[in-house]
Structures are given as structure tokens and as C-alpha cells.
Length: 247
Ligand code: NAP
Image (tube, rainbow, N blue to C red; front, top):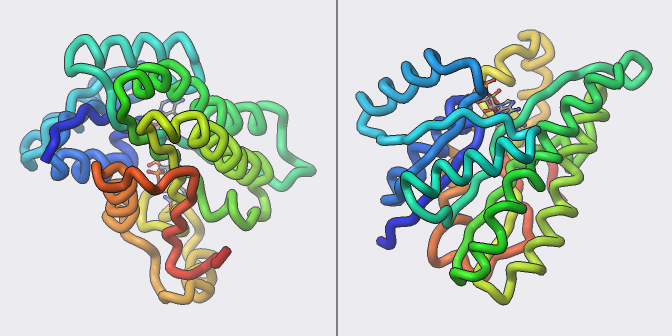
């Protein structure tokens, strides 16, 4: 197994943590990010991961800020080496029906979920191409595929990821750099557990597989697309949603 340097943004989140574990299990050196100002929580998280046998280097990062992304990448590369695998996982929701959605809710979600793609990929992409290897996975969402009531901002940002992914997949294709999206459906994470119980019940009733997904099922898709052997898969979207949306 070739050891690669892998970065997962939003590492301590419901899905990010499991993605970090999957990257360690692949034999990679892994760097994760946490939001600036949450250093104590981040250190505790890192120690808990360590205790569970997972070594993850962590650095503060705000994915909405291009300069901060450049500094984060420089710090990771200085300490671990050149980044080979990038999982753009950090994301937020700020839901409201359009008539009540404030400009701040729109901007926060677009900046965190979509601008972050440019902010993280642009500084690493050329170097990946020059080295002849790269694996980028951008985490989108079922709600970017199908649209969701109350999520015009989130659905737009997550749908935008597909265009971005396909465009740079074409730019990297001859250079050994693959770029793909993974679109989780409803996964058993804190983000989904905050949905009111009666609403969640009706959501689960609409999922053909009949249950929420598990974070490990998303991490498995990420591990698949970032593998050495996945060099012929690029510019695609892998939906992991229990059959809820079939494109
Ligand atoms: P989560 O638990 O809320 O984790 C999101 C992570 O992103 C957290 O670590 C958060 O840091 C980080 N983050 C937020 N804003 C950031 C910023 N400006 N800069 C850097 N990091 C930032 O969410 P999740 O459920 O794991 O979701 C992970 C990804 O999957 C997201 O892109 C989400 O849209 C997508 N997704 C999730 C589901 C689901 O069912 N859970 C379904 C479809 C898609 P803090 O914890 O410090 O705030």
C-alpha cells in the first residue's frame, strides 16, 4: 500500500471523523482541520482518536477564507509532506424557506459549502498535476441533487459542487488527478439527529432501504474514490442515499 498524505476538512464532524479513520486505515498520513477558536475541543478530539488507535494531525482552518486555506496547506505540507488526497467535507446548513432567508444565511452557506471548493483545491491542484497523482473528493448532498424545501442556499451550493468537480476533473484528467463528488443521503449524524423526530420518521419512511445511512457507509465511498486503483473514475458523483434519489 502506498502511503499518501490525506487531508479531511471538518475532521471532527459526524462524517469527517469516520473519513479520517478510513484514511488512516488506508495507510495514509492524515491531517484534519478544526474551526479556529475551538482549540481545546480539537485537542480533546485528537486525543480520543489517538486512544482509539487513529493518529490524525490537526490544524485550525476556516474554509471560507482563501488565505487561511493557503496557510493551512503550507503548514500540512511542511510537517507531513505534499498533499495527495483532499476530501472537502466541511459544510454547514442555515435553513429557511426563501421568503424568510436572509442574505447572511445565503452567503454563509455558499461560502462554506461552495467557495471552500475553490479555496482548498486551487492551492493544491497544480502541484498534484505536476507530481502526476491526486485524489480529490468533494462532499455534496442528496439535497444538491434533488433540491430541498427550506434549503435553497444549501441545495444551490451542493449542486454547484457538481459543475466545479466536472470542470477540474477535465483539467486534471491527463495528469493523474481525479476529482469526484460523493452525495450522502440522510446519515445518522448530529446534523440529521437535530431534525424533529416526527419529521425524521417520515424521512426514513421515504428511504427505500428503510433506515438512515451510517457514517462508515460514506467513508467507504470516499476510500473507494481515493484509492490508487481508482484512477479511471473522474468527474463523477457517487450517491450514497439508500435509494432515496436515483439519477
Ligand atoms: P457536521 O457534523 O456539522 O460537521 C461539519 C464539519 O465542518 C465540522 O467539523 C465543522 O466544524 C466544519 N466546519 C463548518 N464550517 C467550517 C468552516 N468555515 N471552516 C472549516 N470547517 C468548518 O456535519 P456532517 O454531518 O459531518 O457533514 C459533513 C459534510 O457532509 C457536510 O459537507 C454536509 O453538508 C455533508 N452532508 C451530510 C449529511 C448528513 O446526513 N449528515 C448528508 C448530506 C451531506 P465545527 O464542528 O467546529 O463547527
